[in-house]
Image 1 (cartoon, one colour):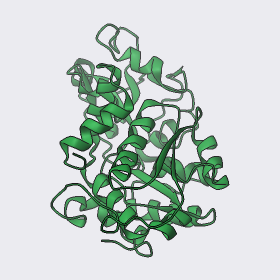
Image 2 (cartoon, rainbow, N blue to C red; image 1 turned 135 degrees about the vertical axis):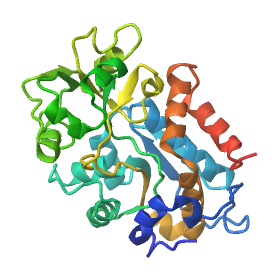
Image 3 (cartoon, rainbow, N blue to C red; image 1 turned 180 degrees about the vertical axis):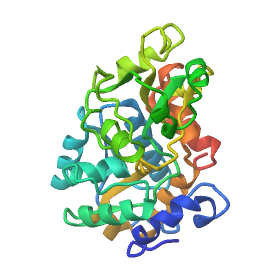
Length: 318
């Protein structure tokens, strides 16, 4: 069990060796031997996209099963509203993505990187000023990935982002912030010496248009795109027609799924809360998050049912 005072200092090790850091078994987790101390209701805020709701349900239902008072609070908005609600205390827990949260808090200062320890150390410091603390992160990440149609990538002999420099002019389809996003066009220029600014095709901010371009009905080549940016947890990545280009120079930052709580929650409930979150995080991989998103997008299941089934499959709840 990791105490609150040491948790975030060891979070990088937990990400890298998550299977052993939290024990080798999973199962139902309890409060303080069934006696839950008096404390605040745990109000979990979810941003206005399905994956955020699924993650909020995963951690929330595990806490409910252990006997803690939990309420889900859909925000109907995105990170700015979430951080405001955490600061005000309207919510006291949220499930975030490490690098994106850090860059939001620092105004895009470029402190986040692929170095897990560095990213988490700076993020911890930023959160502490608002009375917020990190809990154990998951191996699962939701970051940008650069994809090509398999046949196109093969024809150009591209398997890695570093191969783009020798490929000639290419057309990149990505969300509208790509020209200023340090993990998109600026990152490609800095890390790979590839300039795709002139070949950039903008899409809506939530990348829905880019995802549509990657479907079987509209492959990238037909859309006159060479490369598209998707999220690493998109179910579209399971398509045989697409290949993810290797980020061989580690441009993309550590976007591990990471719960954040207000300090008073930990002051009231302490180690058992940390243990529950840690054990749930330990089991959540990027591949599993892709599958959970697929169940929402393709099977039409709701976030609560998706979370319940996952927790049952991993023996967290009966």
